[in-house]
Amino acid sequence: MKYIMALDQGTTSCRCIIFRVSGRVVSSAQKEFEQIYPKPGWVEHDPLVIWSTQMGVAQEAMLKASLSYRDIAAIGVTNQRETTVVWNRKTGEPVYNAIVWQCRRTADYADELIKRGMTDFFKERTGLLIDAYFSATKIKWILDNAPGARALAAKGELAFGTVETWLIWNMTRGRLHISDYTNASRTMLFNIHRLEWDEDILRELDIPAGMLPTPVPSSGVFGATDSDVFGGSIPICGAAGDQQSALFGHACFADGEAKNTYGTGCFLLMNTGETPVDSTSGLLTTIAWGLGGRVNYALEGSVFVAGAAVQWLRDEMKLIENSADSEEIALSVKSTEGVYLVPAFVGLGAPYWDQRARGIITGITRGSNRKHIVRAALESIAYQTHDLISAMEKDSGISIKSLKVDGGASVNKFLMQFQSDITGVMVRRPACVETTALGAAYLAGLAVGYWPDTAAILKNWRLDAEFSPGMDGEQRTELLKGWEMAVAASRLT
Image 1 (spheres, rainbow, N blue to C red):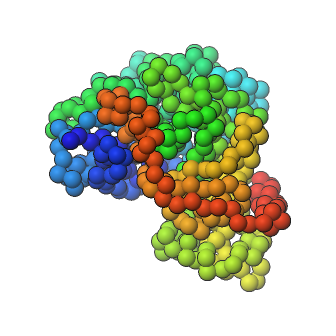
Image 2 (tube, rainbow, N blue to C red):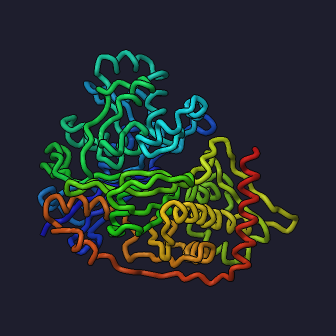
Image 3 (cartoon, rainbow, N blue to C red):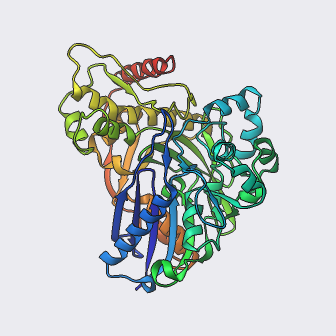
């Protein structure tokens, strides 16, 4: 019997999960790594730490199950998207730390492009709104600020990649420099209609085309690991950005099916089929996956801070000892008593796209305490998701009746119930909440025939829990009115 290995490289941790054909987990390992904050609003990672940590958990997962490379049919990679790595092709050394998707250092340059009237130019080609969130402005910043980077790039000695590109390049010792369509579509450099890097955008941002990886579908036999990585070669057959991978892992194969992932950020995606849907409500048009010679598109709403708000309560504010404590604390009070927390620590994402918004707590009275703030932090995740659902229904013309959920915070019963209440939507949590890694595994397995088709994958999806809306309309309206006022206040800072 063989298995599929999924490498899940996230914003705060690296994971490896090994799956069997039923979609059940055979073995897993996870390790957090350092977050680097050089200045307010700046976020970085050490690419070499990402590489070593990811390989460490992969070896650990294999050892736990007494597996060797011979037991692995294929590897799928999923990753934090938009995070930007630039390295020297000859030495393999990064020329600068990875600039993380959350980083706002290029906000001024993004604003400059907007002021020059380039919003439609970028949106028509990439499906994205101009924002520091995406890779393009981060690449330009590294070329302009890392010593000698521009000269090396001009000579063709630098390579760019999002994190899956960086991992695959290292696993193959530089033989493969590729980016799957989903990750490429998040760079703000990729034409999602022609499936190629956009020469006009590259010229505008002064980014040499020679730095860029070769775009490939999300599923296919790309190559194999170098034999010294795992003791022998393993085919690398799947790659997708974490949110598209989760959409695939949820088996959202039909048009109009949607999922929400509760991680560091919060990401709502709806499969729109083989036709891209243009958003007029602040959502993104992105590639869902490339499979079997076809490309599926998705509408996406991105919340920058979701689970990270709970981490902030734990690490910076010291209001809780463990993230899991938040559920019990939230349930210990009947409501927030009017307290709202808007976690706009790095600005607001969809549907607002306000780079200048900042975090704010409103409605505090003399009776407010840490319990109300903790509950408000959890509720903020649900409120932000409500805003995305409203925008998505408007753009697609589809009323979302149920929402599949995954990610670390999806195990929080209070949050899932409040999510259902505040949106009026059925929330469905699968038995395997590791759908991000599972999606990468499915994409890899399909390429080697481990799963014959998507119908076989659909049979693997199993329900763990459902949450039905129980809040009356008047209360929902009142709570949402308070949230809207709090968001407005955050945008005045």
